[in-house]
Image: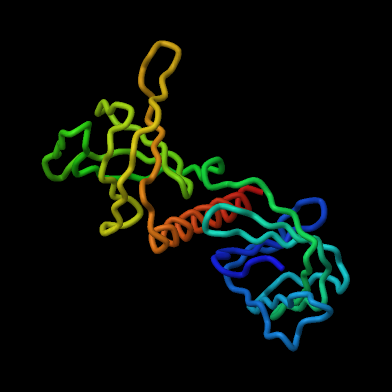
Length: 217
């Protein structure tokens, strides 16, 4: 069976890969719902897609660490209020997305200080503003007029005022003329509670982008 702990999101797609439903609200039902060693998945809500019984689907489970598990199954029951299906041991582990999958954003971050070697540098209030252009569970890409160096370790405030992560510069991206376009950075020593905040933020960004895409079609 797939590991239930640390799953943060479930997607249902048709066998062609088209997204049918993306949700954080689902549950693994109690053991007496299990059939032949298969887990019973239950989704409840309002205005859920009404998928025909027996329709083949791919259930994609997303974990906090970026792992994705895909299970080919079929619908047991689907109404506007509830969707049920079973999953077994036949699943595929997709590529790890922690460090590769990026969500493109355009938000501001704040750097109050950074460490270079043994030296610590503090910025004066309101501190250094940086533009965060993409984010994943492993780090961010930022742009700023300030010139950082590889291995600089900054205290980066992002997402909300009290959310600060130690963030290390891994690479400097330049154009063909040598102009600095930005800095690829990784998060250092991220706690589970902090990963949850990042995961929720990424999910909300992806959801907002889907809604925008619907409005353009």
